[in-house]
Image 1 (cartoon, one colour):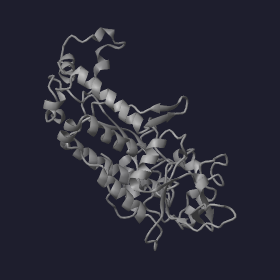
Image 2 (image 1 turned 180 degrees about the vertical axis):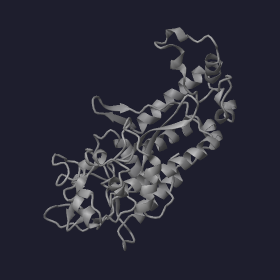
Image 3 (image 1 turned 90 degrees about the vertical axis):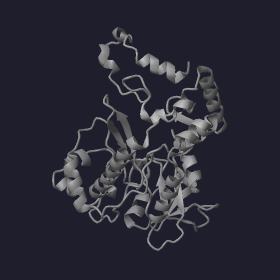
Length: 374
């Protein structure tokens, strides 16, 4: 028997051990991504049935071993604060979402990203959402993630949010639900590309037959968007990725992203602010003056750690004076330093319809997101 056939047979049996659950049958109220209520494969898996059903336990063991070897060879790790670098875990059986299911989800995520961008632009700009009472002022001004030094009514940046991440899950009926929004310094692009690369090598037939959406156009669009964020008049902008360093939880992801975009990976100690502009520190600094100006920064450092001069004085991850550089408008940092007001899971839901209306009146004309991560 194959792994999937065994699984389908098991979940369709009416004699599951419900009595062993602490709260009875209600604990099994969940949506199964592979098997429908009748025990058959869902549409997303049906096109892959011939190959997927051939995965025997021994074959799956081989796949898991090869995945572990490939990830180890590439040095893929996730750094846990309490236990250091741990090997990256990759499930050999992917989550498959068919095009029909993805289409409305993609549209909703794009709309959500536009709304989050408009809200951020307003909260750090004219603050119409606060003055009109759509968003309680105390919820924003009293939040530790709100960066007061960067809030000003004359803020001209209408597109502060270049990247956003969304935690998704299905309810028992199979409807997608948003669990959390990540706008601080969302990670995962590098891990996603590495996952794709490894699976394409250990399960090439299954990968090719699934015909997944390509991620390369996303990287191209992101690179173009970062370049377009440069100050006006800069035709060949220098773009860098600002990382907390090798001890960051997602250090591999950051390095992969920089390499995939063809950008320099820098730490705060590699940069310096002079005259309200950001520069690369030259060899021999401070005896030698900087000559290479940085035009755009894709920030992987949490906003409050970006500037020890005006934000967190104990930060060793940021660049002293970066906040002033943003205020002067000499540079346009990607994933702007002020994109630091995420909505936490469990926070009170705000009136989305009223937020959309108020934000639309204060934001720039609607702009389609370059891409949505699939």
